[in-house]
Length: 85
Image (cartoon, rainbow, N blue to C red; front, side):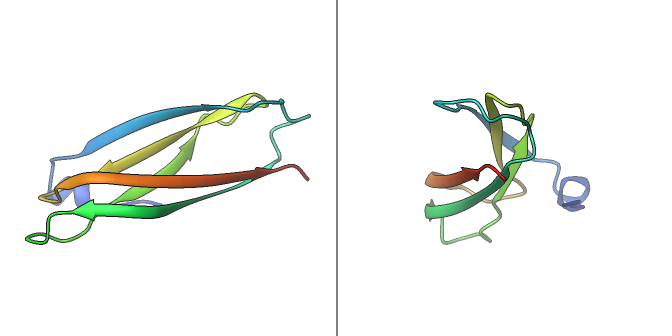
């Protein structure tokens, strides 16, 4: 998902979360969903939060959560599901 927010609000703030699977998949064609289950943000600004799946391997992946512009995030919880084909 491309975003132009970083060009108008250059305050990009990514957080990186490496995920290691208990058992490796046979290949990298597994299906992944990621969702935000809780989010505590300041009420003064818009809620801008994005979750991306990066660096998929048989053994794991990386979730990158980023916010930008004037969004202040106090806490958040993501959950994910990875299912083999």
